[in-house]
Image (cartoon, rainbow, N blue to C red; front, side, top):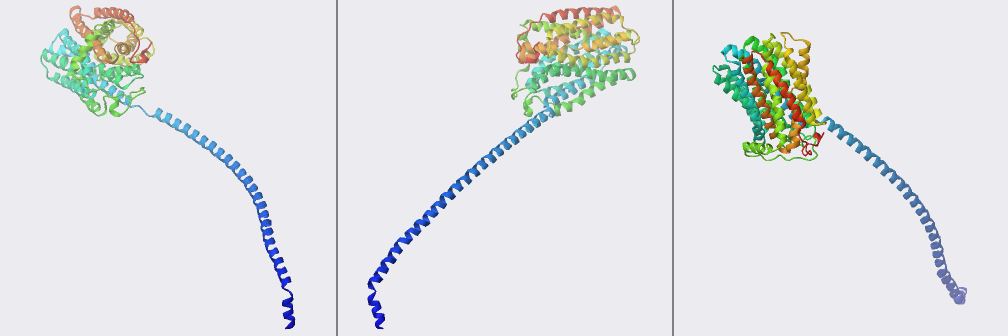
Length: 511
């Protein structure tokens, strides 16, 4: 007990000293420990940060490389996709047929169906002469009215198409043709022939004239117009190829009345195709004309169709090219529709050739007419139309001079050569004539061509009538062949003096 007390009493300084030492240790060690710990931590953090930075740099570098590779792969994929898309677009464009070609096809079929009435006049002259004892001059007068109205109606029909639309005008024209041809079955007097076959069929056929093809071509095509014109012009010859042998067989075995009914039914059969499939303008189906780079709005209907046709005529007659085009085309009509189409069959029959054989030769003309007209359209897109016309008329005139010595009771090689040659040249004049009209008169070219076509049919009407009169007076057709050959030589010279002008509407027509 004394010992414990002493010990406690004896150690206050030591305790204080111990306390100070402990305090010193307490105050020194944590600081040092903390410092050491912080130093150690800081050293580790710096090292780790450096390692982390190096790792991040490595990661960024790898990421950049991967991104570049991804971008390059993406670019390659996009390029491949663009190439595929371009190929698909080209393939789609190649396989997609423009609506203009369907319209041209319907027009072609329509003209073929309407060609039946163009095939019949030459086959009717002898049967009507035998049945009613009408002179060939009288029958030729009805054919002349038909041909004249065919031409004179054309420019008004083109203006009517601008006013009321192609589909309506053509459908009504086909109906009028069917009515006129059908009514001839009950005719007993000359005036009825003049009314039915002359007036009604003439008016209807005039509305179905080449102005129809010109209007369709101008509206639906800006490229390949010459080719399309040639194809549509050849449709009439194709129709003759189909109907001439058929109608001649009917006339020979069943008289002329069933043939007239056949013409009427053929015209009516085409009406549904026209009404359901033909369209007036590319804008009606939301398309551009073939070859156009921009969409073309459908023009507003033009009022006063007759006034416009006359106004265009009054403007055109003040220009020299109109008279040259009209004059050459009048000779064209005189030497084709008025001469060969109307008088070849009776002329061949005068020399002992059967009607069916002569009609078959005209059908062969139709075959080569298709080839010649389409080729002429191709040429008209590439060469000077004036020179083409000069060559066509000159060769036609030469061939007509040889025709009188080629007519025999049987078909022989020289006659076949004449038929093939004349077929190639038959309406090959149409594409270059239309090309010159388009070049000279621009937007009014369809109506101007209608008036030029009127001169074509007036020439045909004169020769159809005068040829019949010449046959009644001279008892043969030789003078008609020679006179027509001389006229063709004049037409060749007239074509060469037509002045060209800078092309405005159709660049493809440049020589």
